[in-house]
Length: 146
Image (cartoon, rainbow, N blue to C red; front, top):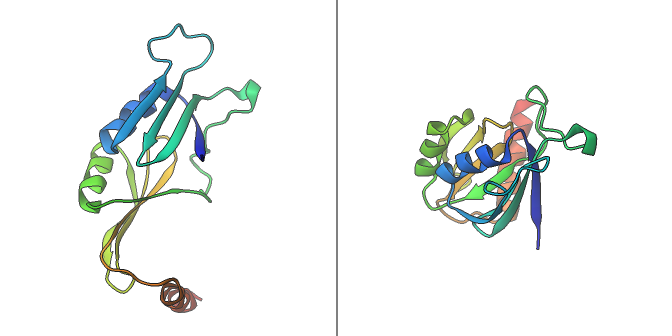
């Protein structure tokens, strides 16, 4: 099993936000337990388990730097990218790349950054594009940028 751990300022608040945007399944939460020194929430989006922890610098648990370029993101493939994109924007997510149709790659695609500085790629498949073809398309696009 793969579990993604995320450090945030307030795990309870972050989960509540995510639950309004994504289809989540709560597994455990410290919300109704005595607050010892930090909150934590364990939940699933699709079949991926997430574990949110409150920040704790003494333990080395740091929130993402809002000014740093994020080299990792969560890619969520859904049946309705438009609906998820709208829920994300309504919940305060920032648009990094607007939702757009890419017929050549066979997807609807967007990148958003949540209020907690984690990036999400929202994707909806339109039609299948094999790996080799996708690589060729992306290679051509990158070459044009040089």
